[in-house]
Length: 240
Image (cartoon, rainbow, N blue to C red):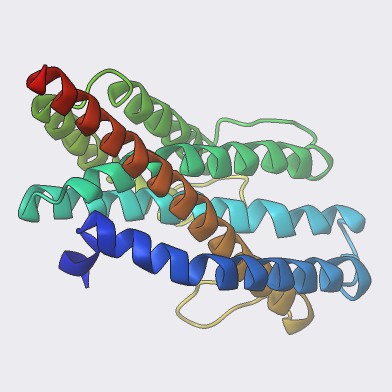
């Protein structure tokens, strides 16, 4: 499958087949998820209505980690199989992941103010997520100059080094004493959150994945078209 999608024509054919169904399903899932959030999810006995910030904060945080993990896999594919589309996939995923991370930080501050009495605290979880945001920005700066192979290799190494931060973010609340609450969904002994709150959260997360796929496919198509135009211009210069 990886080798099949490494061909730009195959990727674009698949994109054209699944884009509209993905768009339709994403709107349905997000609509259903947030309808449950605002109509059926009960207010928390301590946090009141502010608990509903969770349905933007948590999926955004998960997607921030997912995007960087995806970039790490793509960087490995670029190193091992020299797939040019893997480098493009990293390039288009970085701004998407940065946006999810930014939303995670902002909604976390909005949620933290009434809970902790502060917009920001330098605990392990928040600091490591902030580092993730800067890793996204750093990678984007590295890839805005040229597409030379040496620059691409440097960008891949940058991704792989930054991947060390992913498990740090995940386990920071267990390794260090932080204000951030421990995991309540992804646990070995099962979720501790009630199903009335967990089900809408998972539905919204699926919708966020759909949103990522839509944005990813559009940006990939744009990058491939730009690359095609560059090749045409180079061909004209050589033939002149």
